[in-house]
Image (cartoon, rainbow, N blue to C red; front, side, top):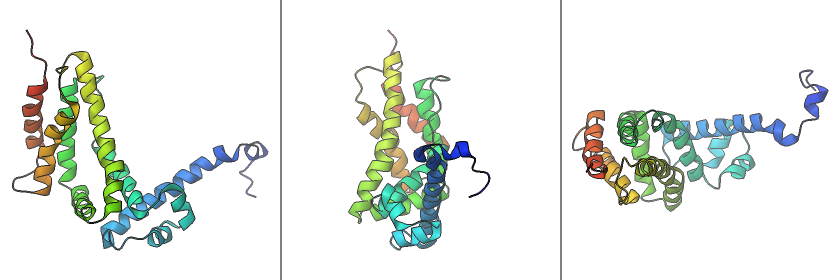
Length: 208
């Protein structure tokens, strides 16, 4: 045994000692899945190929994910999420947070992330497994975050109390996805800001 492992470390629980190694392996699997999709496309992706590139066992992958669709869904989420986080509402209003995040989404979708997202959204129309995974790992999680911001705005009195949050999210982000999937006009940060202002203007609580 390596001398770096002291007697005190040996007495640690197997769960505590295993976490860093497990996370390293998990990250390697996610990176492998993303690189394979970028190189060869989603349809050619298999658990065998992911395992081989990640240097992990198939049983390890199946312990954490039920399918390749679930792996790629989480992989994409972990890759893009840091770039499209909502600015903290402790530092700004809910409207400003929504506006800033929508602009970040527009910027992210115009780059390589957008190219990959377009491929996955297209494949999800024909692959029920991918569609379900995409709904769970991307759509619902992103909507949950937007819901938190809008509810905070309602609670603070910034936004009207009678708005339907789900409809508001559709109105805010539907325009982004429309230009993203049907590029009849540029999906720019400027457009995202204008779209946010237009929709949020109808959501803001009017002063007496």
